Length: 604
Image 1 (cartoon, rainbow, N blue to C red):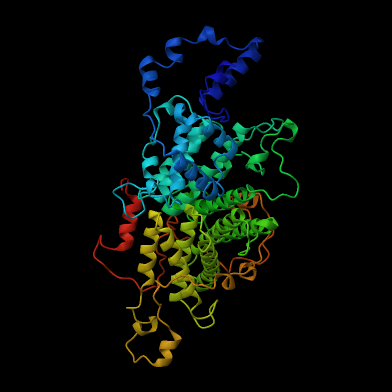
Image 2: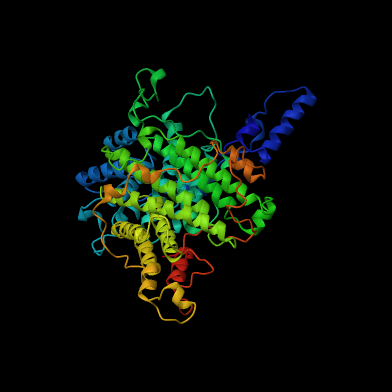
């Protein structure tokens, strides 16, 4: 139909579109006149307005520069490392399809696929010991993969004319690499563009129920959900709003089927996972669900005052309802995990072990994000309850990440964000510790050291990890400060006082050798009893002001209820009214101000 066609490349799903209005007028016109024939495009379209002008065509089809690929042996190694270390956690690419295209040399004549190959090499370089992945002028190791990434244009001219699944994959892969660089704030912008183009392709909409799955559609879904997960993580990291709320898309989750079963001789058996065989994609689906909960957390608990008022988030009850609904979804997520995705530090299969580390570290990070906004509440009960929950999550997260480090940690942005957030929470717990605190005296310091050492190890190739390491060591190096009680009023400090209020020890010790003994299944027991309802309906109802279906205990006394104006959750130093262990440097010289300046800067 004519008006359906002039909806250009965008997916025709919006009733507010002016083209949708034109279609409605055409339908009504046909009903009134009795003539229901479709308009003839050849009759109404004038070529001068419906085609791309020659000068525009020459711009968007401008020949792209020839790419320089690594030597064949290095190319093979980097591709293998990418699929082993990165694609196994966020499966943007379909391994058999990629390898088939690579084998026939498609990257030599197809620039779109060539960009994908270069970005795969760039990400694989982060795990390669081969010196050829480094720039000649770099001795730090941080330039690994830059020679491949730098060849790919940030925004292709061709994408102004047409968009393909290769472009969606580009946004996923490029953003992941930018997270490793000094330009990490640019990843948020790249992911925002990726979401726009994904919506243009209709990747956010569910296909017809009778439409069989296909490789093309499944690759679109994977790329779309990868962009969503990375964009939620970047928004949480930088303290910025998410691009699109969850209700704007209804696409299904990726099919839980390993890559080798996508295509079968019998079309009826395509995309069928063998019964009883654990699927490597299931962990990605559960990561998506966690990122959806994270998105709800950002848009509700961390929204600004204007947004809360417009959304009806006023009064003393909405926040407690929202936290209860988020807790409900987190519990449902945990309870629905298949057995092979339960945390097991002794898991032998490296693929599933790496997925477990990433998945459960992200789970504890989201849990901390839900509850850490109550740490500065006026209510001491609310702050104490939130700190206890956040501290427990931080300790478990630290042990999981340390366990992963001993076996070659696969690093994602959320992995580093989880380590930094856990370390920050543990510093706050140490400062506020009282006799009988969870974990016993000294346990928080040990777990803090685990976070610092994980970031130190990751900082060899990841710039973001190095920045996190610097900030954590700054807020954790407090040996020069006297105990909290001694700053209330001058008095003689006894030996008993010194033992009751131990100073924070140095955070630079090596990773503890007894990893397995400190990490067991009992450490990961449920923290609170929460209602059961997964499909995000509970969150939407809570956001609209309706209480969760079954909240068990009342949350009114467990969470602060004032209407303080919260900032978006940038994961910087946690601030509380009675944390006095802060310096007062001159403006511009503070480490935290410098960190904020770096994140808000548009250039490195």
